Length: 207
Image 1 (tube, rainbow, N blue to C red):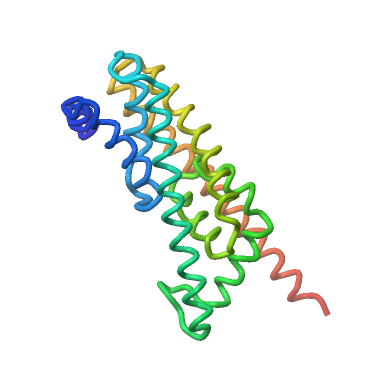
Image 2 (cartoon, rainbow, N blue to C red):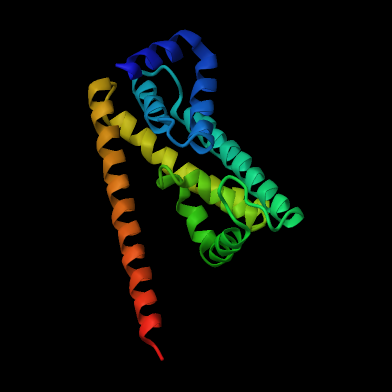
């Protein structure tokens, strides 16, 4: 089981194990498939074992999350500048018209998305790219991201402490959590798709 190997690695690194926890939280934003939540859960296990203070683990993973968000924000800002310099081109499959649509949505719902971003696996990094592209003030975006990261990391650490150091229960807990969130995102995407299709049909039948 890979999580057991990570557990041993962090334990062998001693104080430098905090670096692994922080980098894991950061990589969740930069590389969305990275299973950072599972590694953060280990922080709660360490707190139960008395190996690492829970408050220090919380501070490290929150800082890692904010750093990852800042990187994605910078990418979004860079993309916006590229489009401004070359409005007729597309970058990474994204057209200028699509970027403008994303920017408009971000200006409307941005604060709420930023506030809950850490609870949305798979798309949390995209939210900060969109925030950078929409030029949401950096301080505001990262402050909301920090609040979201603190709340999420606190919950994850509490769950890690709840399993009492049992790695098998930890793995099962993470898999259930991820499936539940993916299922909710799927239902939400389906709902938005049906709504958009209904609006198109209504506009098509209007004289």
